[in-house]
Image 1: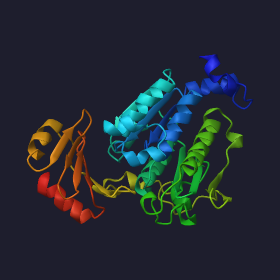
Image 2: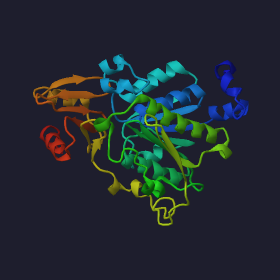
Image 3: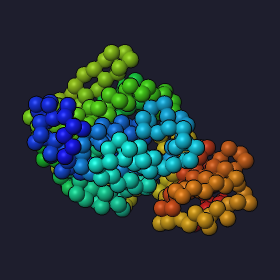
Length: 339
């Protein structure tokens, strides 16, 4: 271990050298490398986590730079997938950390493989369907889940431990949707709120991994940093009817729970994932007569004249940009991609 790198952290009595060694021997999964995810990854890599696995389905755009701390204008110019751009920056920050960067969508088909060997799951997502997926795999595999959400100047976080705390489904009735239906696209978001939520998520994760479990917060913390509000809701007893932590049915892990079409929060984009894979060179030639096409090693972008565009990934995902109407997106997809 490079003691000089972590000397200030080792001086912190709750961590010391024993805690630092625990961090080095720990593995975490971060789902989503956007606003929350980039700050989470930054803190974890600087802290000396041993193994970081990142999965994200999107690529870097100019509007991301206001709050997604690992990206820059060059990443936008190259249209890099966020997972790849994040890994590039993180390896420059700490080359000692093992980093897996996966360009893809966390779904019931791959989530069990994603959590293999993982000690904590961290939430960098922007939608509750994926959060329920993370919650359900957390309780099925007995892996703690560090939840976070942010919109506008509001945020919230909680640290769920299977067998110890209720799960996300249990407390959803208590108002875990920070935006109450709002998104960053409709009401905006300020970066300091993102930083605060991510820092809370990482702090609880570090407490757990360094065996300081007696200091875990055990609350759902919510705040509004602009209007100076903050309060904690104590994690109550599990809901006896909860299908996840009590009934062990894990509904988000069932095939029927996964939609082929997903509206991406704040992106004016619908993701359609029907094909198991797509050959980018083939689709570049096919779409060249109908759209302005640009291919990178990671994706294919096809821009149509009417402000609609496709982003095609090798894993079969297509982002239909220019609408949040799933019917319209499906019409365009069927017209150019087909079944």
